[in-house]
Image (tube, rainbow, N blue to C red):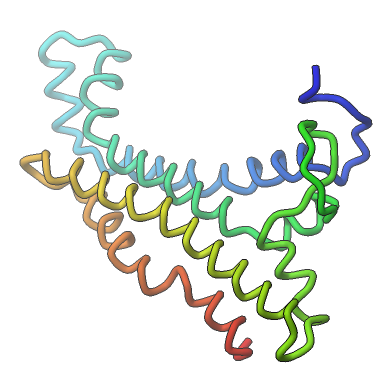
Length: 192
């Protein structure tokens, strides 16, 4: 299969993907756990008193009540995976090539900026290209986060009552517009 061609040497796209997957598991599991704990016991007891089995109680009462929090946990994990630069830079191989195999080396926009920023001469075309790549990265992040924030807002707006876990997640997306670009701005203006 072309997707798995080549020799796995440990510095390839597959390794970077596995590392990112392992890194986001604690974020997703802890926020999801808090969302499940936030479900009131009266919700569980009501389902059980109506004759629901344990699995039906979990599926119909608990997961429905906590699904906004679980969705928020997945989005936070996705945001962490997208924003992670250094772990990917150290494991992806940093090779400027587009291949179809997961076992080949590659490079992300963030790792290219991290690797090339210090060598770029002030006023050079390379520095301008790196700043443009930062703008592209910011636009890609914006194209991912805005529809998700709008989708979460619509999802929350359809509910008659807000669960205690939804308000912090909605607040996170409202604050995201100012916080998400801070590390990039610090790097651009040389404050870091």
